[in-house]
Image (tube, rainbow, N blue to C red; front, side, top):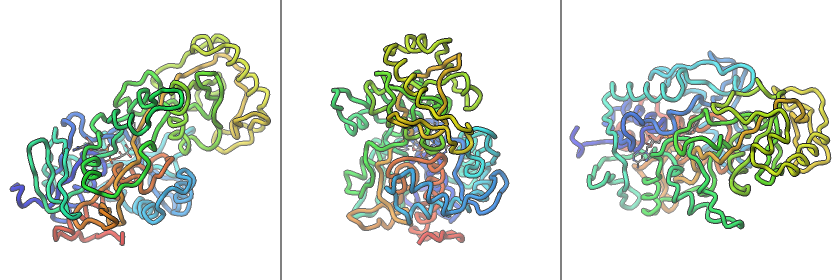
Length: 473
Ligand SMILES: Cc1cc2nc3c(=O)[nH]c(=O)nc-3n(C[C@H](O)[C@H](O)[C@H](O)COP(=O)(O)OP(=O)(O)OC[C@H]3O[C@@H](n4cnc5c(N)ncnc54)[C@H](O)[C@@H]3O)c2cc1C
């Protein structure tokens, strides 16, 4: 391909980038995809995913019951506390109801969710083989369609003139094109940037020093930084992120999903002072798991301890690292390095406050506490049956929410005006929909919806019109 004739550059190699590249290519545009990672690490955070949250009005292949637009929207409204753009959110929700046949066409297969404990069978379509299989299928399809792919190609600069995209730079190399889609993820892997965003707390700690990154090490936010310098409009708070409490023994990068510890709603969480600090039973785990990383980040030493007893075993996905297991609670406190007396006082107060009704982890049951702060509003049962288990947890950052402001064509904005040929998709614009909070599977919904829109619009801006132009406007 002669780069001077190039239509669309796509920056990134994850789900959003691949959706954009495929759509732009299907519309007839020539496409060059620049992936920062080497081939064996391609696929960004998308390689770690398992599912996509999808709207549907009746049972569909792997999805049970119905999950209509309004219910999806209400879930999103609740988890974001209203810090979301309703128009863009509803656009992503509607797109999620029609993207799966297209995904299937490009080699993505679906399977039902695990039964029992995850509450996801009616809302989330699981990828057969996980995100790695999805990414591989998309790369295969993109290459078959003639998308050029370059690995080890981190874009560090995006040249923009009066809001119009001109070229990218990869080190000393300059590549021009008629349009560009930025799908380079968040900036979570740049610890220095996170450190600057989080600053120092009242205890003199730098919380970001204790963060672990659940996904790729390549999401350093270079394209975002370059566009911020060029005057692009941004959205979101730099400290807001999808942030999960994960096993403190997880590696700094790419620990992936198996480092998650999913038993918080079945037990209690205490901090380094052996005190509880939040309602462990506030809502179903898929709507709350991404809150706990931030809660732990706000605790002394950025560490929390999840405590369960034998009654919880078998009711959650087993974590990859075994927990500390003891026959008494006193022993558990000692092994976790917590003050034994304080710990026992916390557990005893919790146990005494439990009003156990009919325990049912599948519904928001009536087992709750009375007379303690914070309360546990559902699934509250005394921690009293040996053996006891403890897991030390750290904040695990999945992706950051500070990103590029876009409109319903996925166009990046400069001084309130949409660029005619620069578009954004995925984590780099997820902050338009996710001001805070998260509900499982919506990252892939946003990336797929806006990746497809951005690819179509980028191609259209170069004169290539896809037959199935989105009803975005
Ligand atoms: C462990 C884990 C599990 C998850 N599970 C789910 C799930 O089941 N469902 C769900 O919806 N979401 C899940 N997520 C979130 C999900 O990964 C993201 O929402 C989604 O993958 C974002 O896609 P993306 O394409 O925007 O970013 P990514 O997939 O992160 O892709 C970004 C790409 O940009 C590349 N890049 C970065 N900088 C540059 C540069 N300067 N130049 C060129 N390329 C660059 C990266 O190498 C990467 O290929 C999970 C995340 C993690 C970490």
